[in-house]
Image 1: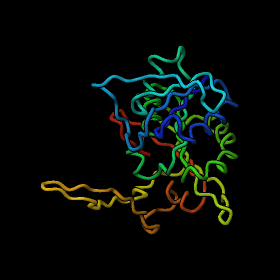
Image 2: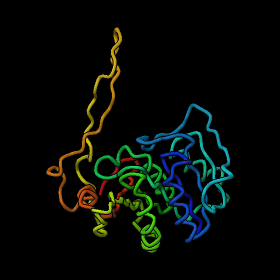
Image 3: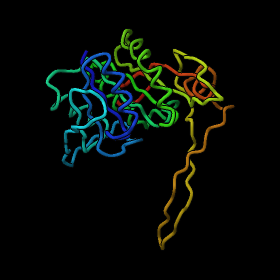
Image 4: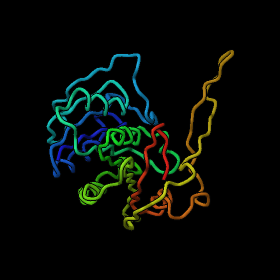
Length: 246
């Protein structure tokens, strides 16, 4: 199996190395990831600037090749398919993202944006996210089994798998896996804009995410699953205009 791995947290993020190590047990792996942090870029493309491509010789996993791309997560997929790889991959993995990609927040996600771009090219894709990078060690123990499970069953044409891992602590162990989760109809966080400085004629604002109350999150959804301590697995459809539906 030929596997391409991308992300939005940059090529040196710890999550992409964890995902690559697990994927190497399934086949030949290549990595194409942004040179810089690209969260919340959705399906943004680089159109009027040059895109740098640089090989990463010391990537911390036994991959066939790794490159850092001076562009967005979607650029990484397009550059890999159109320039870097001699053959089309059988599978694209995106992540592991530092932070959840659940609920309406997936509309902004660069992690999901890369997965949607892969689906547009008829390549099966799986997006992985975790509550925070500090839980990657515990996540890694479950990752290989989930990869095998999801590569053996299709999400369907135009669909991608979206997998979220909860915060796993000693006093709050993993409760299990919930499959077929729906996308929560609200965002997991609500934005608040706080002035941090003022100049004549201008105001500078800081965006702060406030967790959405549990009472606003319906049962059966991805957000409810991770809030309750479960791994959430769901299918998300990529529409031609870049939107999502369940």
